[in-house]
Structure formats: C-alpha cells, structure tokens
Image 1 (cartoon, each protein chain N blue to C red):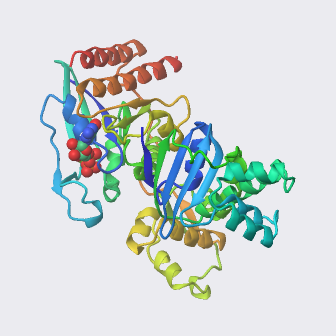
Image 2 (image 1 turned 180 degrees about the horizontal axis):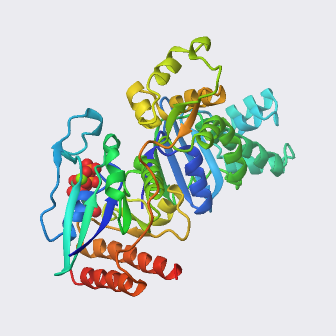
Image 3 (image 1 turned 120 degrees about the vertical axis):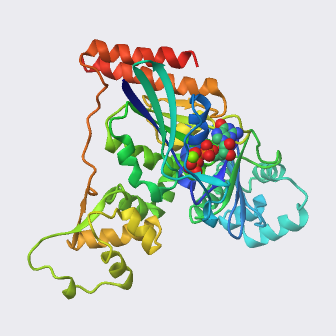
Amino acid sequence: MQTVKIVVTGPFSAGKTEFIQSVSEIDVVSTERKITSEAERIKATTTVAMDFGRITVGDDLVLYLFGTPGQRRFDFMWEILSEGMLGFIVLIDSTRPETFREGRSILETFKAYAPTPYVVAANKQDLSDAWDLDDMRIALRLQDHVKLLPCVATDKETVKMVLLELLYSVLAEMGEGE
Amino acid sequence: MALKGNLRDFTITQLLNLINLARKTGTLFVQGPTEKAQVSFQDGKLAYAHISGEDNFLATVLYRANKITAAQHRTIKTRAAKMSDKELGLLLINANYITQQDIIASLQAYFVSVVQRLFTWVEGIFYFENDVLPPNDKITTRVNLENIIIEGSRKMREWEHLQSEIPSLDMALKFTDRPGVNLRNVSLSVEEWRVVSYIDPKNTIRQIARTTQMNDLEIRRIVYGLLQAGLVELARPIGTAKLKFTVPGETKEEQKSLVNRLIGRIRTI
Ligand SMILES: Nc1nc2c(ncn2[C@@H]2O[C@H](COP(=O)(O)OP(=O)(O)OP(=O)(O)O)[C@@H](O)[C@H]2O)c(=O)[nH]1
Ligand SMILES: [Mg+2]
C-alpha cells in the first residue's frame, strides 16, 4: 500500500478544514477546539494539531490531505507535516486582506521546508467582498508563473480544480527533471 | 469586486502600487484615526484628493500656493462663493489673472500633499469604489503615482530596510562565539534584555516576539541592533533541514503513472 500526501495550509480561518472536508471520503478527522483568545474569535472553533482527509485511489494507493492548524503558535507542526509531501496548497481568504501578509509568509516558510510544487488558492470567491484575483496576485506579490486559482472551499468542483492544478504542476516538475 | 481592508495590514504604499499597476479608475475612501480622506484615480493616475472638513475651494488652493494674494482670495471667496472650481478657473484664466498651468500645478501639489499625509496613517479602514469619480464641478489632474509612492515610501524605509536585513521571523538567533564579547560589558535597554533572555536556537524570532509582546517592527529593530553589535547571529531553527522533492516510485514511469492515477481519481470525485 502506497500513501501520498498533499498539505493544505494558509492563515487562520482561510477555509482549510472546509476544503479538505469537501473532497474527503471520510469525515475530516479534525482536532477542533473552541476558540478562547479574544482576538481570534471570529468563529467558534479552530483546528489545533491538524486536519486529516482521505481519498482512496485503489487497493494499493491512498491520497491523504493534511490541513495545518491556522494559528501560528502551532507552527512547530508544519515541518513534521511537510515531510515527504507531494505538494502543498496555500489557501487565502479573499475577503480578508489583513491575512495576505501572513499567507505570504506561510508560503515562504513551506517553500523553505521542501522544494515541492505548490499552488495558491483564493478562497471564498463566492462572497461579495472577495478581492479579484489580479489584485490578489499583486498584493501577495506572486510571480506570473505561480498558479493562483479561484476557489470556494464549500464547492467540490473548485476544490477538485485546485487539487488537479497542483498535480499538473507535479507532473510538469517531474518532466523538467528528465 | 470590493477592495477593502485596514491600512494596518495593507499599507497605503501597497494600495497605490496596486491602483497604479492595475490602472484603476475609482475613488479610495479612507477613514483614518481622526480624519477621513477620499482620493480619486483615473486609469491609475491621481485625479483628485480631499480630506474631509478641509477647505479645498480652488481659490484657497491657489492662495496657499501663492498664486493669488490674500486680498484676491478674500474677494473671490465673498463674490464667487457659489461658483464651481471649473467656472472660477475659466474666469481667472480669461481674466489673465493666472494661467491654466498654474491652476493645474497648484491642484496637483495639493492633491499630492493630501496623499502624502495618508502615508502617516498606520491605521484606518479603506474602501475602493470602482468607477466613482469626484464631483463633476471639480477640476481633476493626471499625476503619475510612481513619484508619490517613492516619496511616501521613504517614510517606510526603515521598515523596509529592517525587513531586508531580517527577511524572516522564522529564523532563530544564537550568540556569536566571538572571544571577548561579554554581555555584561554591553549596556542593553530593558527591551533588548528581554529579547536576549530568550535567545536560543530552538526559539524563532517570531516566538520571541510573541512572548515579549513586540510587534514585527519592534522585534526587528532590536534584533537588528543586536546583529549590528555582533552579539548574535541568525541561525536556522533547530530541525529544519531541507528535504528533497521526490514522488514515490522506482522509475520515472512509475512516478508519472502514480500522479496520473491521482489525477484520474480526483476527476471522478
Ligand atoms: N462563503 C464561504 N465560506 C467559507 C468558504 N470556505 C470556508 N468558509 C467558512 O469560513 C470559516 C472558516 O473555515 P475553516 O474551514 O474552519 O477554516 P480553517 O482554515 O480550517 O480555520 P483554522 O483551522 O481555524 O485555521 C467557516 O465558517 C467556513 O464555513 C468559502 O469558500 N466560502
Ligand atoms: Mg481548520
């Protein structure tokens, strides 16, 4: 049995748990806790440790999706999570520009951990105050070759699209290594 | 779609850059700590700017720019109070009081000065309304944003400098093992001591900042000082050795087939 993993990361409340839940065949094994810190109480629960989703490909192959905890005080987990990953996805809440800088910094940190392919997903594009992708690209200072994809974590189709784009990048990367 | 947020997180420099690069047309509304501003752009160029409550009547702008005298200013204000800026401008030009260039230059200088003031607002809710332009009777300009951004950025230069010196707060600090450096002989401030007491290759700068309750700028300032003094150096936090990117599989073909199977599976979800 072979297992591969993709890591879903991003700032606090970006939609990581939701994203994994949309495509996982098991209920996300999540370690949600009630939020105690006043500053971060924009929703009731947050992920501590990590989320964990599964997609079975065949008898011999399983894909795991790991979601990082959003709060930086758990970032000692990141390195452990990133070991051996196929690639990673940075989710950004398109409606909260105050998290863009953090998103960028998370991206840089993961890039430093592992030289795997990655994509950035502009989540919550269904909300009326979501930023445009072009604006987000500039704000996040993403170079043209970095994939920035529209996403609605609650909509399975867009989640699939993000995962597929990441896998296409993995294929492309392997091609280059030849 | 909406462009809105807080200057604390998305600075004026970043906003102007965005408006410039995306060649936006519309009005930026900023609610600062004590004042409210509105700044309009046409195709990414500064067209108009105003801080609420401030007298921005054309005559006043010209008077402040020394283009008309105090007496002229008074006269215009009493006699032509109901006149729009456009009407007044035409009148002054036709009466040979002043040239069109003078008017444009004075307004540009005024608008730029308003925007420059925004750079000092570190906090404030902003909102960009696409395609909204200033009132029709106002005279607009077309000022390139590049220079404004450069000038404004000087104010933020310290910050930028510190960020380039200390690019990542995810690095750790360790004491240099230079002979002869003894902390006891260095006079450190209270803040510096607080940081020094947490120096350990296991603690990232970010963790130290959290613990000592310093913001990014404060911690960077202190770390920069300590670095400059040669007391500490940046170190990779313990246990972050670089990993290699590998896809499971013996051969390239096996690896590709694995990724293709994943792709096929996800398509059918
Ligand atoms: N409208 C909308 N809401 C979303 C979307 N994705 C997530 N949400 C909501 O945003 C909130 C945060 O989503 P989570 O999935 O808990 O975010 P998270 O990144 O796991 O958060 P932490 O684990 O606390 O860092 C929840 O209320 C979600 O229902 C989306 O695409 N559109
Ligand atoms: Mg979560």
